[in-house]
Length: 451
Image (cartoon, rainbow, N blue to C red; front, side, top):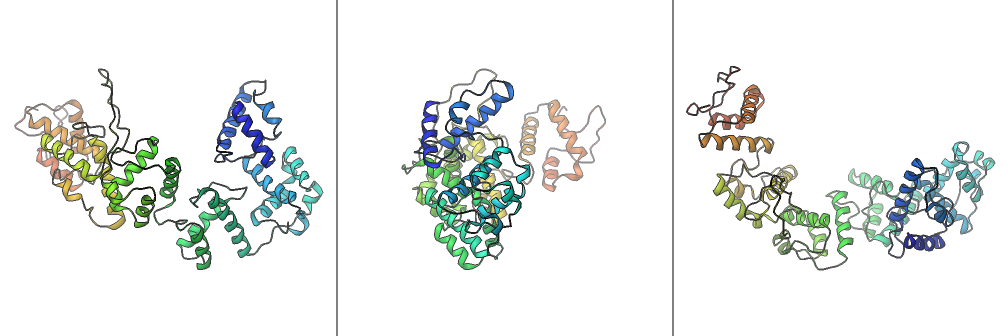
């Protein structure tokens, strides 16, 4: 608590308030996150107890409105307007707030329109800017040209990029009271639709060449998050990226698995992290020491995605030889210490994404199809697991379990909805729509079996 209060005092001395965004840092201290947590705890405490939250008077002494009854965006917009006043600008409601940035002017006009319905504390803070109730009634809307509006957003984009090094700004994020995420989302949509003038696109490209990445914003945001967490350290792909948080490790390993299918621009960005094509294909998961599970305990899921196609294929080949295919490899299946189930899940995801994106077969399809033609079926993989288990049961001259018999009955009933290849597989174990299925024996499977 004392550490947080120290940085809160320092932050308020610099900015004049505690109007922070969750992502704000001050002298490398996460002041935004700390204050957000204090606000949540204060609100929870005040909903249960009549006594004030212990930190409330301490923070209120720094900023009386550190936890206001209105939303944080209002506070941030007010700060932007207050700074204009401190810099000597007179806010003139009658004239539409000339001299103010587009977004701030629009926000001020909206406050004037809503003035009678604002909280008394908000009205008081507006009066500190020189906007009284009488002034609010005379306010006129902000009038700006499209170019002036664009220039305002561009200034905020430059400011954001100077601070964070990129423009991967989520739609919901604001910067210095300006809704930069919304502004950039609009420009990305216009650029994608071919409606953003070339000179404006060039201006944004100058700030960040990947401000509108063809692979989508979520990937770009994740990339910069991982880049910030890495802090310039040398990445060891072969050892599974030791030293990084689990989320960053999983993301990086996924990129290595899918490296050959990435956009050249994505590959270029990974090079900036120190991951070349050679590094990507050498990627391996971290080797973990696992405790033997207690009797009856479920097996833990792998904590990282597995290695590249070349790294996992030998294990898949060995498993398929032992188990007559890959159909019994479930999500948490391990083979010789390798997380084969998770690896197969990643390969299916990769293969399906490649087909959706290009309309062409995945380059490594033949390697896995040679081990099991149905390793990535067009139906749910759980169906294939059940089918493969039943086939093994019948091959061993065993009677199907009750759950297997119910499953077969369901297939018989829904025969007309099945994929043609599913029907072929079921016919191979002697199930077809002409089978008799009285209630005492709902199917006839493999007439040589004692079913």
